[in-house]
Length: 374
Image (cartoon, rainbow, N blue to C red; front, side):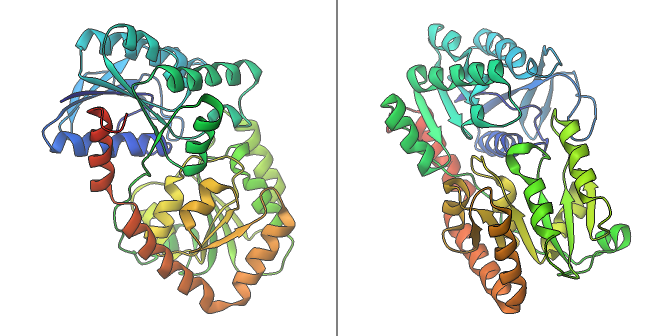
C-alpha cells in the first residue's frame, strides 16, 4: 500500500505528540513493506531551533519530502498542509492520512481527486488557549471537514469519540497511541548537569503552553514545604511571553528548575528518576508524555479530564481540573504516603504495556486504511 502522512511538523522530531505518533506509524508501516511518504514542514524546529533538512530523502525506509511553508505564527500548518496535499495528489498514494484538526482543511481536495482519506484527531485543538478567534475558526473548519468528508476517522479517546457522534453524527474509530516498553536509567547525566538524584524531584515534561497549565503546578508547589524539587522540562510553542511569565512566577524559589527542551539520555533519565510525573492540562488528546512516564513505571498525577483520567484508568492520581488547591492536596497526599507512589507506578507500567501496544495500533490503523469498520 502507498501511504502519505500529512499534518506533522518534521519526521523524527519529538516536538509534540503528533510528531512522535507519525514517526512511529510511518517507520513501522515501512518495515512491513508499505511505501510511506511523510510531507514535512519547512522552517526551524520550534523546540530545538534546528533548521529543517530541505532535501527529499529516505529515513528508516520512509520517504521524507519537505513542502513549502509560510513560517509565521498561524500560517505554518495552514500553508504546509495545503502544499503537502497538492504534492500528495500528484504522487497518487492509495491513502492520505491527515493528523490533527487544522491540517484537515485541504482534505476535501484529496477527496475530490479520488484518493482515500483518513484523519486522526489528536485532540479538539480549537479549544487550546494559544489560538485566537480566527485560528480557532479555521481549526474548527478542519474538524468539520474531517467529520463530514474523511473516509476514515480515528480518535485517541472515548470522550472525543462521543463528541463526534453527538455533534456530527459521525462514528469514529478509537485507536489509542502506542508506547514501547521502557527500561529505567540511573541518574547520571541529570545528576551531573542539574544535581538531580533518584526520587528527588517532581517532573512536568511538555510544551510550555497555557492549556497544559504548568503555572498551576508552580502555584500549587509553592504552597507547601518539601525538600523535593520541581523540574519544568520543555520549550515554548509560539508563546514565548507565556514561558517568560512561568519563569517570573517561579523567581525566588530555588527548588524550581527550568531545563528547556530535553531529548535523548537526559530525557530518559528525567522520566526514570522522578518521584512523580505531573500533567495539569486543561486540554489534551492522548498525551505521549503521560504514556512514557507510565511506561517508565512512574507514579502520575494528572487533571481529571477524561483524556488523562482514561489513560491512567485508576493507576495514578487525579485532581480537579484548574484547581491549584486540589493539585496541592493531591501532591501533599502522595508525598506523605511514601510507598503509594511506588505501587501506583508499577500498576501504571503494567497497564500501559497491556493496553498501548504499537503492533496493535498499526494493525488497526491499516484496517481503517483498507475500509474495515467504515
